[in-house]
Length: 170
View 1 (tube, rainbow, N blue to C red):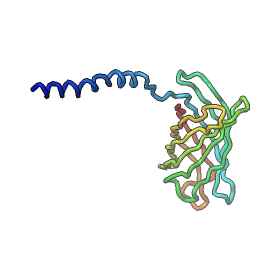
View 2 (view 1 turned 30 degrees about the vertical axis):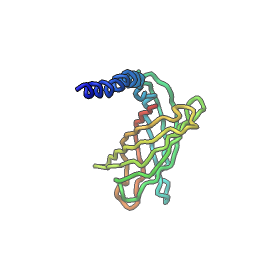
View 3 (view 1 turned 60 degrees about the horizontal axis):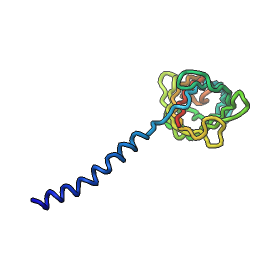
View 4 (view 1 turned 30 degrees about the horizontal axis):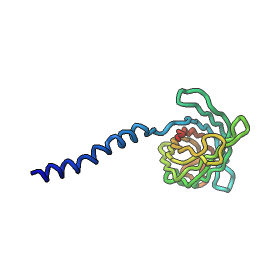
């Protein structure tokens, strides 16, 4: 009985000694912080015979309290299948030129597009490139909608209006 008592005492002493370390480590854990929420409004027009849309638009960002932190414009080409309206969208990137003359690039992973009654939705994740002047290294969660003409016809999309909301987290 003496041995069992000593064995138990010796086995539990190191366990109790470790508890303050585990509590202290969890107290220092910081959850991810939202840097900004950005809204990108864009319009695209078909580039005849290329299967792409030339997109241009504006970007506005606010902080967690809703205060403006950045505004700018973007221009990019988007490849669109002629007759498909749903499925995976290939990796893409968008560079925003901020009003102060600097730029940030968002690289998206593969996104999922679903279309119903002419309106498409997009969900994608990505990152802001490390060489960006704003939000460098942030993780991006994006959701958006778009509507346009030409989806599902042989000529493909002729025009597209879209809104994409980005949550930037570091």
